[in-house]
Length: 555
Image 1 (spheres, helix red, strand yellow):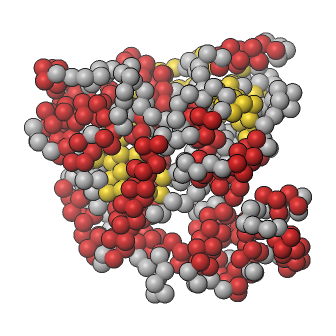
Image 2: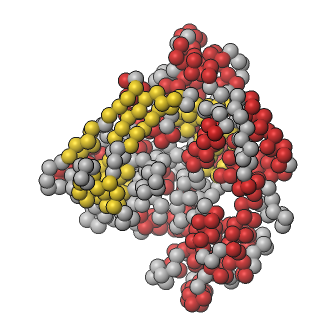
Image 3: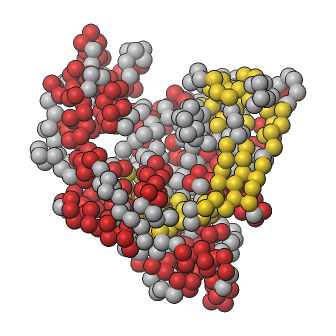
């Protein structure tokens, strides 16, 4: 399912489980939904399973929002006590749409406790007291953390079943554009890691003397992270500069923001220090995970960062806010940087990195290796110092569940594609009115009409749109930009079209320079099987994986 198709379903007010592989745009889609709600006069309650995830979405943890705190069980008296707290009762009573990010990290017990409080406050015997509920996350990533020995995923709860969720499984990839790496990640996710996948990863195995010095190290345990960051900073000459975090609002709320913020309360830097940005730039200069080095200090004393992409950026303080009912309840301000020598896999979740050094020899939790590897955009950015079997394993229970999620999403996609446009818009208008908002006439814009429907040729909207874009574009890069996708996704769409007999050479041949076609054809002819990595290396990396795939389509 595309982002636009998922957004169309979200706007109908259905209870939705939004999922997809890392880098498929879950957060982007939910942010678009939140923006649409607010433009319509509807203020959602945005929460997350962890403090780190909460800072990414500008909300609070579900534990704080619902008042359950760190409790692992609640009696009827406990529920009554929480519901009797004025600020909790007011918050839940005023809510209309509840969004919960990183649902994979929320146990079924916590999920049910939040549900019980909502039912009690709202006096409605429906899941979450009748709120529209949107759950966001990927169960292949890190599971719930609990002091209890056995923890069930949220989907095991009867509340999950009673919500009658529509599953929206995003299938396009925006982070990775490396076909070989995507093949490895897909194999891990499918529980089908073979020797060739292991070999691809082990080809990235490096010793302590050969890995880059400016890439962050990811560890499965906390123990060495602070020690390594402190030691590496201490090796640099000169005096350090310290930048203190400031805060506004209620102390307890500010403390929650601080715990979830990836930038420290006291940021200590030196010239030459390896750093990582911890927030997205509104101007697009950097994202959460962009790497760089402190090149010096600006006229105002702020650190000047030489990013790995060549940009020089003066890092200035930014705010992390906690919003509730459209109002900022608390905020913290800090330079959006942290030392990039080491961090835990847990804290890396949600980041996109150019490169990372990973010690996965002590991976102990299902999904840890998958999360660490999927942070990085290309296989060439992965530097492995250790790897064990558990790092390549995902939770066996999730494998079967994921097949069910995919099937449910495909069914929803077909159902909405078959609906008359007027019916879908009518559902959206009804939802906005029920939430007390005002319908915006541009709510169903042209891009979403295309995404919902099917072309005259009977193609799914995403393939039809890609085909037309490719025909009209001069280069693959231009086509990807026009569609708002990465190049590898455009090629994947063309491969799907070829499989169903809807692609001819004339549709895409103009994207490939004529003088390289014969060379790639010869390399393809000399290689048995479908693996692209040997061909890429045989051509000495002169041509991208995407270009090789396009030429392969000509055969």
